[in-house]
Image (cartoon, rainbow, N blue to C red; front, side, top):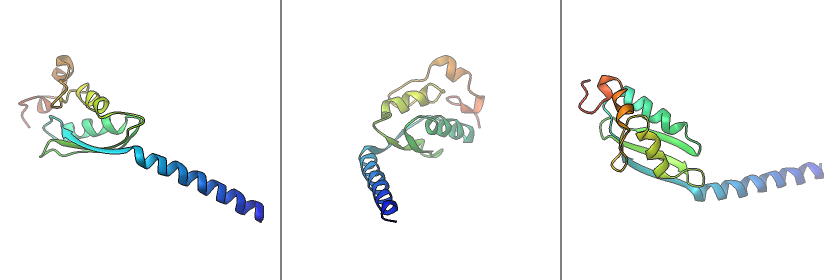
Length: 114
């Protein structure tokens, strides 16, 4: 029984130490991402959520703001913005490649009709 308690306490301490270190690197940011509709929302959120280090991504179709929680030891805000731009949705600092933007559904393009 004593051996079990020692192992349990060791595991608890390791988990606690790791979680404390992780919380220091957890960042939150919010930035503009151009988009028009629910398909844009799905594409933007999936792209960002699939990035290693991203904990949560939520794009608001009305405000055009993307709120992201991420581990700054694994990814930067600049890399997140670059990933969004590379699927056709520009930010205030990164333009989308024209060919990628042109391949979006009509309603998702700049000045697209919904």
